[in-house]
Each structure stands twice: as C-alpha cells, then as structure tokens.
Length: 261
Image 1 (cartoon, rainbow, N blue to C red):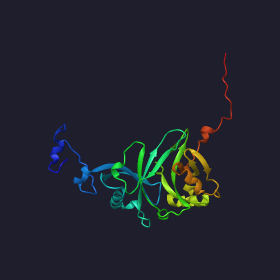
Image 2: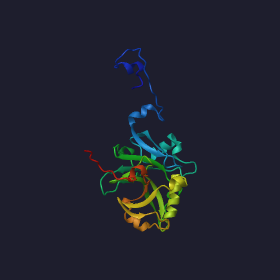
Image 3: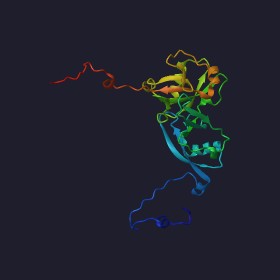
Image 4: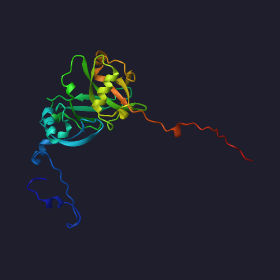
C-alpha cells in the first residue's frame, strides 16, 4: 500500500457489505516503512543469553545491501535482550542445515563472516539461522583451544537434531582438560541447574559415529584429534527417554486358548 492511498482503498476489491465489521492489524517497524522495498524478511532464532533452552523465532527485515556486521548492529538496537548485561556485546550469525541422510553428518554449522552480504542468505525448509552472543572467553582463542558445535539429538533409526529443545551453538574446549571441566563450562553456558543438567548423556561424534563417551569425567579432550575432523566433529547431548513400565513389563501369566465342546 502506497502512502497516497486511503484505508477505503483496502476494501475496494473485497466482497460483502461495506458496513460489515473489519479488523486492521498493525505492526510497529523499527525503521521507516518506505525502506521496506529495500529490505527482505528473514526468520531467525535468538536465545536468552543466560539460558540456552529459552529461545524464540522472529521475523526481521534486513537491508538487501547490508553486511552481516551492519545487520548485527541493527539487531542489537532492535532487540537489546539478545546480549547479556555482563557479556561481550558481540554477536555472531550461525547457519544450521539439517540432514536426514543415514550414516552422514546430521547437521552442518557455518559461522557467517561479518563481511558477507545479507542478501546471500537463503530461506530453505531445512536451513535455519541463529543469533548468539559470543562468550567472553571465546573472543580470543588460544592455540590449545577450539570451538566445537553442541547439539541436542534423538536417535531411533537415525540421529536427528532437535532444535526445539535448544539451538545448536559453539562451545570452547581446551586441550587436555577433563570431560568434567567441559561439562561444567557447558552447564554454565546453558544456564541449567544440576537436576536438569544431570539428565543428559554426552558423546563426541565424528559425523554420525560416536568417537568418545563423556560419562567418565576424568577423560581428557584431545584438541589435536578434534582439529583433524573439525568440520564433522560435534558434541551431542541426548536426553534418554523413560520407558513406561506398564508397557515393557511382561505378563506373569501365560494365556492359552481353551476349546469348549
């Protein structure tokens, strides 16, 4: 609708009585509406920086000609809560592509460069975008440190990534640190209490294959090995399902058909 049109023009091609009740819904835009033709809508997840399992999906209008860095600066003005009060105030844009192929990497995670153009982002059914604040200890990584993707998954016939529980994110790991230390840093980043965090099982994957179980807190992280499979290595969090004892318990009595003559 152009600025020289009137509200009556909205109903010029509609059927029904002119006196029938009508409803108009308005949405406040964080920019001048005349810029809409130079922007494109894109759906993006963003997470509560203090609690990873609190997330929501929003539709934002991005300038077609803007870079990722310019877009992130706009987002911080539109949604101040995307950054924590004592955080780094620096954001990164993550792209996650889900895969359902058997015996392959169940998802691909890509960090968009701040110099990339936002018009390159594609809206696909299996592709999702996420904004997350960079942790203070992840801004300048040491040589013995590495960022590893973390994702919640379920497994029946194949491994499936569950982005409804929480969106895949990046976690810093340090060479030769224990699995217990990794879990402690992970719990802090996820913002979960002990009772919730202890329900998860942890495994390091190479694609769809488990290369290390993290149940033993004394196990060590080998960053050199992780770097060899960096593009397909990830930390999986599984929430085991509790079976119903009524369905799994076998009957104590055997049943046999009886023939009555």
